Length: 263
Image (cartoon, rainbow, N blue to C red; front, side, top):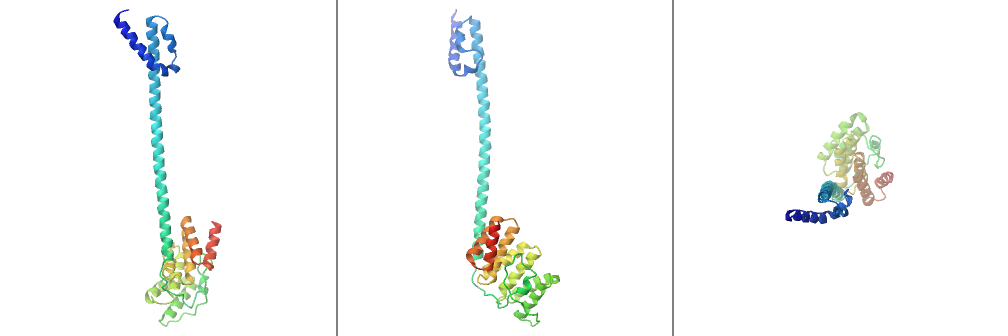
């Protein structure tokens, strides 16, 4: 055997040593390389080398597949983190809104006349306290104008006129003790017409600007009703809980508790 052949066999033997851990699945066992002619040995070594190459290819494919899975999981984690951040931000907005509702200055007192007669034409829920209004008198003063607007509330064909009358009233008589009632009825009338964002604005104005008014508990409760109507259950719950906390033992708190129990 010449030196070139010895060198070739030595190289193949080294390859066998490297390939041994991978050759378990190869068709020819490494122990059979030592028998037979040189050509048979070379053939067996080539077979083992090919098996080694196939195993390396499979491992590379598995590594590639695993990397794809990792990338996919990383994307899902990032998406979950984004959604979590959105939830946290939403909760912050809810708390800010509730704080705004509860932190208004104690600027107004309830009007002596409340509106039980008009309540029959309104209310998404029972909860507004009231008394029978006087007949409208065209006297040009706050009391007469307020009673005239209440009379329009009682007439279902004059709801748009009632809205305009109350809007005029809150601009004309900013210091009137009827201000919380007027804002409340603007909220109720807009709610009846399906204008829930406008309704929420006026109800929230009662709570923020006139927190000591008898209308405040029911107004805050109506804000929760609107949130629930719009499908924002989390915000509705937060508002109902705030009604119970801020205005305990009121009709608004009782209605809020009923809503919470049913959710």
